[in-house]
Amino acid sequence: MNNTHLSLGYAGLIPFVGLSIATIMGYPQANFALLSYAMLIASFLGGTLWLSSVENKLPGHTAIVSNILMLAAWVILLLHNQTGIYYFAAALYAVLIVYERRFFKTIHAPEYLQLRTILSVVVTVCMLTVAVYFHVGN
Image (cartoon, rainbow, N blue to C red):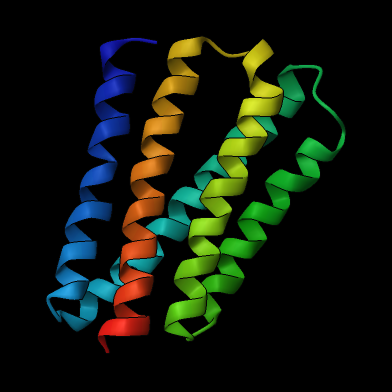
């Protein structure tokens, strides 16, 4: 993995952190932008699972999980229940990181798994922070 991958990975956190802060500060458009971005990234990660299932000897259900991630992201956008949406989004990331740890450790470099862990933890914290804000703060 080179510096471009690392830079793009960490840069992808900027919208999560910035939009989480903007949502909590009361900017109404930030809330939908955060959720949309989260679901876009969930779909992207579903695509990485799909590719890994094609190029590597992973269990057959990996392709199914990749499609479930993409479809779940779409359904989440159709829902308009604030708290449930964010908890579900955080759950998606938690499941993804567990899945990657179990199946990807034999096919991806440790640096990739470390990066994915850091990114997933930051995203999950952002999403759960907004969920708690909506649940407690409003």
